[in-house]
Image (tube, rainbow, N blue to C red):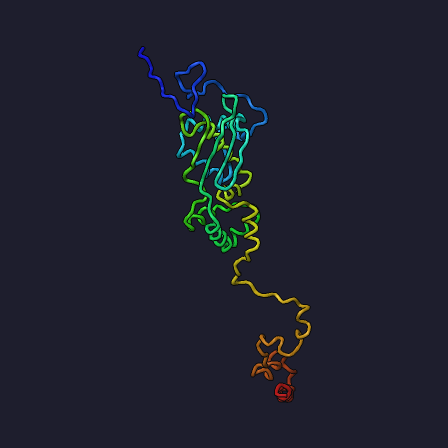
Length: 278
């Protein structure tokens, strides 16, 4: 069998003590058992149930290696992720692999500035239904289109990812485990998607609550009855009602509806006409 060429040393991947000629690029063995790690609720199949979580997972599974994502799901379900910290544009996590020291994972996306968020909040406030659902703690599916109309993305298309492990594949199982647990955390709190883009739940809802809703063109001002007591019965208070006038044939109406006894019609009809005229 021909000799395998030695791999060059890499300063970021120190050599193994028993193999000084070979960098420690191979992370052999199973992961170190963890107690109290973050464990995915899903025990089989896909991870993420809400539409926004599935949208994020669909993006991952479209751009990442399926084999490594599968191993990442196993890590997430085994509880190998020790911690996840999310802030504007940044996710930091710690994952226990086969080495004694956990690996450091970093995932970066673009966080939007105040000018972009001012446009987004104005667009949300102009849609009464979207505004009401967000204030109720729900994430309307149309919000993705609202972001797109402002020229920005709700979900990231590109992820800047790093892991301190020696795995040469990308993304590694440690990154994949963090991404899956991140998607499942979106199930619990959809506002984390927005917080990753730079707007916390408190900031967004505070802005929407302070911003008056768009006027309803069908709304009619309601004046309390107590405020109308002074003039409710005054002349002109019902000027909007048309004036009631007797019909021109009112004098002849009664004899037709209630015919007088025989022999009295000639005497009563002139009297009816006289009363009607008066």
